[in-house]
Every structure is written in structure tokens, then in C-alpha cells.
Image 1 (cartoon, rainbow, N blue to C red):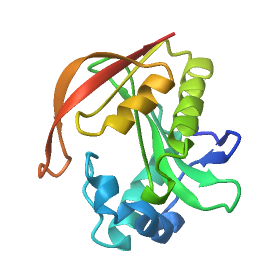
Image 2: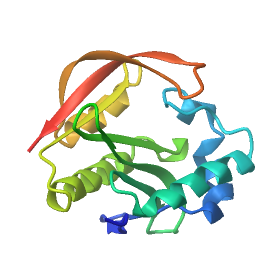
Image 3: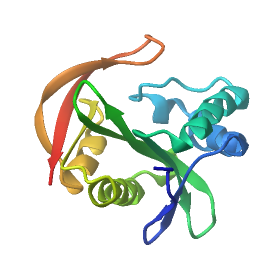
Image 4: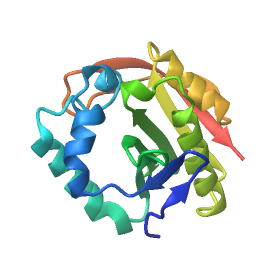
Length: 175
């Protein structure tokens, strides 16, 4: 299934494209505070962001990968991104998200995560999803709990470039 456009009260969740590179880079891709607990590291420049977005754009029709940019309806500004990614080893989707610092603690992440979860359950017929966050990133855990995930245990993860290691909390959603 092609990644669809989804809506919430305040957001349009839409597939990201390479043309979004400058905005993504400026709004969150270059922010070390946003990247602090993420599996990706801060983007060095907008070209790094463009390369990532080109890969994301190529995956728009790929089964098992659904990734969206979070566009605020009030001003059409991209404020974050997130999605679900099928993990064969788990036999279920993994939910992930990030949002620009200026938009922290305003409910946007919870709103987007809830809509993505609704898509997974209603359109993809998923009964279980999992998610995890660095133990220090308590607010991400609060988002997970607000949308219906429950804590199941601890784990660890590393950043994609191997420069960061995290102790983490893992959560499960069951329909």
C-alpha cells in the first residue's frame, strides 16, 4: 500500500519528499536536542537531509515502511516526522517519531502518533505494535502511554552511525 495522506485536527501527515530538505534540516534535522535520543545523528547540512529524503521518497510504495512529515495546518510548516516500520524479527511494526523543539509539549506528537496507530490498526489490520525510547527521554514514554502502549521491559539500542548507545524502555500496543 502506498503511504497515504492522513489528517488530524491540527496536522496533515504526508509523505516526505526531497524538496522538503531545507525545511526539515532547519526545523529539526540540524538540532542536536531533537537528535539527542534518536537513532539518527544531527544532519551536517541540508544535502545530508536531502539524501535521506530521497531514500524516504523511494520507499513510498514499499510494503512495511510508512513514513510521514507532520505538517501543521495553521501555517503549512513541517514540524516533525514519524512512521511505522515492519520488523520481521518481531513480526510487527515499530512506531517512531520526532518533532522540532519549538513544538515540544503542545500535543502534536501525541496527535500524530495516535493517527498513525489508527492507520496501522484500521488499514493494515495490525493487532500489536511496539515502540521504545531512551530511558532519559521520559516525554517520549508519556506519548506512548497516552496513545495506548504499555511498558513491557528494558532494552538497549545504538544510533545508526554507532556513535550513541542508549538504555531504553520498550512498550507494546495490543488491540
